[in-house]
Length: 219
Image 1 (cartoon, rainbow, N blue to C red):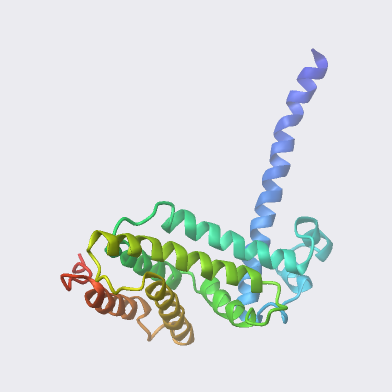
Image 2 (image 1 turned 180 degrees about the horizontal axis):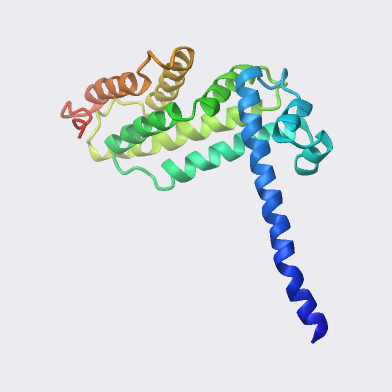
């Protein structure tokens, strides 16, 4: 009985240590986002990230095995958060697809550090030897496939023109979103990324819908 009570008394401390570890890990990831946004991957250092978190480089390596491991963890965490928030269910119509993209752009405008990090790393990852290269290749492949699926279904239902290329439209959407995001990152106070994206999506939707309908008017 005494041993059982002693074990019970220790449990809150164990849970507390896990909570501290989770909090520290989250702070490392958040700090890494800011560093990658400012310097990119190659010019960022674990020592500077650790210093800004308030721990030693050894303490950082307790949570992440290497600089490459930290980078991949940052990208995966960001992607998982976006999927959970915006793509937990498949859009039923092209309008839902496009409105989700507008919501995502608005969300990106509210988190400039993460958005600028994405721009910097996506550019760097064009080099096959970059540790984020495979991540971005898979990400674009997945994004295009998930965006194309409801568009293809809309073609089959007769809502979109039969000559619509779902994969081509999906790839174009990804390219335009990233291009507008890059221009916004250069001058966020003067560039209406969300408004420009919505205007583009409205024109695109009108060009592929059978009835020529675009996005619903803003509420």
